[in-house]
Image (cartoon, rainbow over all chains, first blue to last red; front, side, top):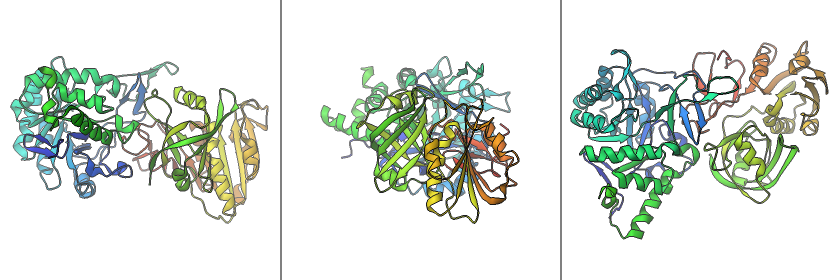
Length: 302
Length: 255
């Protein structure tokens, strides 16, 4: 029996270790290091209805042990993804989870419909972007809006829907409940924390966009706390992420209530982190005499 | 093929204390594949979190060694300077798209400013091996902060510019290149600070030019899309993947 077999409601993976959107491209850039089929799944770089060139550099900086990025969802658009990226990615032998973004509720419906095709295993819905039509309020910080997005995506696809929660809210449990009632099958969390860095010589923000998303080891305690809170608030499974660098970190997320985990910034530091975690989880289960990692999901709540 | 391997440090010596260092590393897989203009992503310690992208200075395929010439700029390069002989070093490489090496009908011109001279040495060696005659222009701030000139002297005629005039021509490499006769050259390569590259780009009508760019990188592998540079067609390209070497005509420096 596969001790790491991962069943997230209507979505199955060979193991609970995935790589986070925006940190792994579509997988191609990491093929030299290991067989991508070893991964539970790949959350591919965020895709939008139309091509986006992305933000003016500087787009990334390391600060206080983590990184701030503001890439601006640079991508070739959904048509380019279907035509040029998916045909290769679908043959990697792992689940291809397509991360989608939009600037209106209708955009999300369109993306869900366009990506309801063979080769796409699930959709991860990024709601940390502004709703251009509704005055720029971020979908991910307004429970009603997040609910509407989930409902719209659900209406337009039969693929499993993963709603990716933003941590930049005062009550994450309310957001989680909103997307659950909108029809989300799974929650992934957390997206990056909004932050900034200032260049004291130039006396101005380092990132051209002024603010960006903070990620890496320093956000782990925050992410873990949020997973813990959301686990209590909803009945759908959670994919936990935020500063995971090793097996120990992954186990903490699982014990807080995550049914799967994702490595993000860690991929930049050491491409083998996801593989090391898969091996490490197996070793931990053996050491504890457990037959499945599911026996420790949310165990910290007991 | 890209490797993530541990190399063994064979030497790590200051050329100028607390400023410029030369490290020689034994790592045969990377040495075997490395081409001029490519770089390594090096994990220098627990902090900084990110690897540091460092140009390859010299490759000895037969010996299975790679050398890097690096300037102390931040914590990452400070960490590198403290590494000792026989210590392991965590490398990813070879990375990026390098310089064109072939036999040209006329001479080749190499132009380097500051630590930007680093990738030009291996390039010069390989161009010389290919049968080219090479001229080199190196820019530094002063005689005291100049380095590695002896290396470049082995591959061709070297001209120096220093900001304070303490060595060679006074000024930047521009002072040497002003009124230069480009007729005896048909290929130029440059690496250095952005103002220098901006000036070099103005020479693109006289010379077929390749520029090696620097950018703040996240992964160095082409995944994070951080280190992009604006192209003449309005698109962004990744310095770590499509670069660091670009045709001068491809790039624009408006940002």
